[in-house]
Length: 104
Image (cartoon, rainbow, N blue to C red):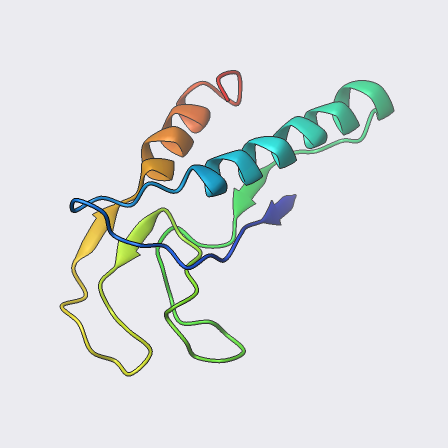
């Protein structure tokens, strides 16, 4: 089982989060994992990312660095509505899962 992710300072633009950097990062890692399976015979049985939704950083408790596919409206001081907004990466990763990794 493999897992990884990317923490970034996501910003809301026009009510959306356009996180192409997260999509690119995850796509690149999935492609490298596929090479490990196809070329080196590594028996990968699963893959997941760090978090489905933004959560406080384990080491610092901050919310400004975000990890998930769902943006959570909250800040480092605990202020916000905690409303969730699907990031662009949400739909991308849903399609990756639905296609069993064939569509990246």
